[in-house]
Length: 336
Image 1 (cartoon, one colour):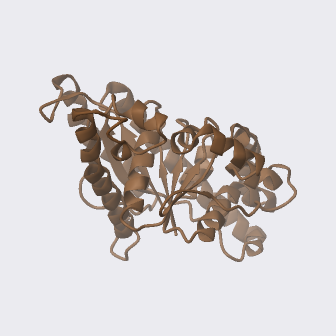
Image 2 (tube, rainbow, N blue to C red; image 1 turned 135 degrees about the horizontal axis):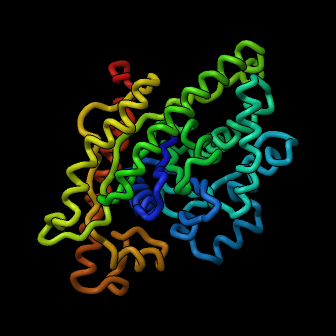
Image 3 (cartoon, rainbow, N blue to C red; image 1 turned 90 degrees about the horizontal axis):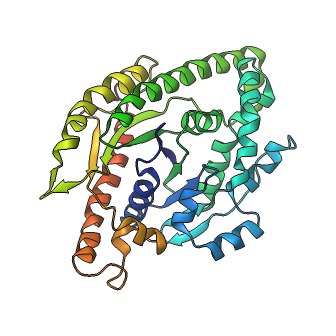
């Protein structure tokens, strides 16, 4: 079972919308998909389920926060939970605003890991082990994790515990200038985790984790450029400059940085695909807790309905490409 994170240091790039639509499309192909909301802002949760359903889940203490309460309190391992089924083949482990309490423990846990201490490794890897348990309970093929726009301690453990990550980008100056920060932060985390594992080996602490710990080498599966206006399927001229600059910036700032740390990277171009301007359809889908292509004729009328239905093949192709790239970097021939 693989974990794929959707991550960008910059907010406002349509990350959560992309993840949700790709996940629903992948579920329709027969793959079993777990959604994990690892952002205290709970945007993915609000996209996937209505308020009444969420209230019931919170009352049953079945969110990502509730699973981690024993870890936060220092009293044990994550609680075993069963996620909520939202579609055939698609489940969600909802988020909670109090997930920030887990993040508050992670800076010290990182320091303890670098010193080779058990408590540090136990807390740092708890979220990943929790995701694996929840995914196993529904026999998921893959988990898609939504994270907030930061390079903080919580995103560090999410990314290091992932098999790979997808980078949603907007074709603008701000996304472009965020890429060096993304690559540098990830490379630093990977290098430090190697030190931590070495220390854990030296102190013998790793023997306390018979199933092993994550390797901390998430592969950059590629980027998806989105949220730009178009005219007759052509990108607006104002954004073309940034579209032209992104491939080189992504390769130099992210791919090469991670290759230098021994991370396997897929061959071919960095771009996974493009999502055209769907701004008028996104709020409709969010209101209905639906993927864009699931909107009914009463929710999206006329040409909007046609546009909405046409997006299914686009999101399905993105989903299949992401899974294919993950398979490539996990093969013996993968590039490191």
